[in-house]
Image 1 (cartoon, rainbow, N blue to C red):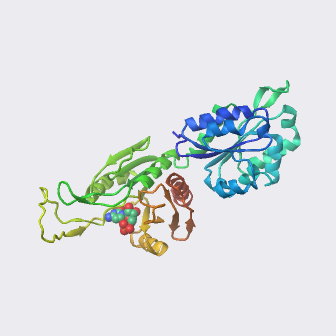
Image 2 (image 1 turned 120 degrees about the vertical axis):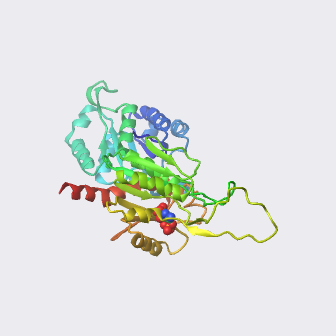
Length: 407
Ligand code: C5P
């Protein structure tokens, strides 16, 4: 169910003969839609040139820890923050030893040390005796305990002529393992209803009142929820985006239509996420025909729109309800107030009004708020933010909900 579109993957290449296979791995990751940045050790450069991997990844290869120019552009901490996942293929015995010992004297190991919460894969490749050695096995066990996923090594004939486990797994198997990292299944059996985009409130047949919401955040959330195994219905105001794969999409125009659709679907959902920027008011009357221009001042009367999320939160069998608070100032205070007055379980606060974040931008800096906690996320893509929100939903609300049901 998962693809690698919008996923940011670091491919680490270390110095083994299998390094030639990492070229094909990078090609296949990009073919699946991933963005790839390559980090090579000096040993890796003895086996394959950085130029080859630069051409395949579409970006300069990162090689040095203490190079002032590269550190200024994208240093080890930025690389670690950028990554949705790290794959080291091939991972030599030396690399595995250094990772297990927590070394950080090479760019690749420093990036890994700064990426504790980033899902990571090792594709070991070495002589079969080196693989069987108790030191290697102890290091592998230690890294597995820390959450590293091992792919391979595969059994077969090795470059040194010996036969046994130690060949790097084939690129397609590693790509599959990367894809599996994102399909967590954490929301299997969960039905999610989402609203997204703006609402458009008609003044007359050609004019309207609306806002700058692009729908990107809500659509990214729908995709991330599907990836986690949820059954997702997305009720969307007018936006230019196609519905993500495997999402049941419903298009509406104004707030009243959105409310009607929500009320029709809400009974069948476990979680409701109100991501739509619903217009607070609509014109009291929408004129049947186009209003004529005149040189007189023109006054339009508005009535408040129904509050969709508050309506859902008041239902007797209400689902878990998560809202959004887009603010230009006093972000946390206003978000907490909305959490309380609307009766929500959680709220995602984000500052809007700057060109680099919020409405219409590709990035967002979010704060995830519930009754007890606040989690601040740095500026990141809406796809990355969406995956963090889904993880929060699972850990903070869904798992507890499942526990309550099982008692
Ligand atoms: O009150 P405000 O618009 O700031 O609240 C934002 C939250 O409330 C969002 O989750 C939004 O989707 C939801 N909302 C709603 N119906 C409205 C107004 C806001 O569901 N009429």
